[in-house]
Image 1 (cartoon, one colour):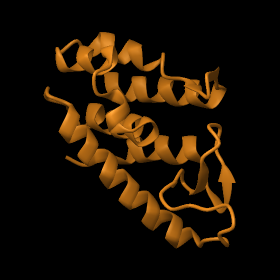
Image 2 (cartoon, one colour):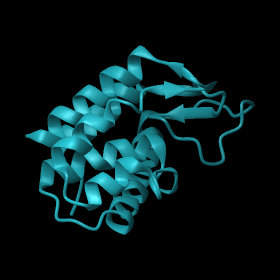
Image 3 (cartoon, one colour):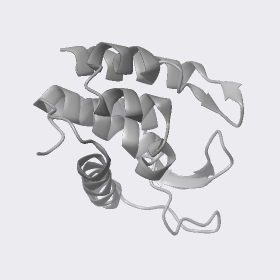
Length: 142
């Protein structure tokens, strides 16, 4: 299964686009649409095409992560919401959590509500993460 356009739009909207490296809310060097792998603060700017290429690769990694950790059937919107969530949090950080265990027990509505708790970076609640989780929850429940 692949992340649909609504899921991709959540990612693009939440991550924004920066053609120059910056430190994200957790202090991680980032470029493009939330790309972090191999990013250094002394890198030069990238093109929009490169940002899209990074996004495609990063989404594919998130899709693989969802497929690896989720043990229940998901519809396209649920898979896409999960892909956005995993893109942001990382699949490994979910393993063993009450949130993922809830989903893997088939408690879809409870899982959707638990998404809203994942709105902090560096121990601080962030408005942007709250907005993202609400969008992911809406997509997951649709």
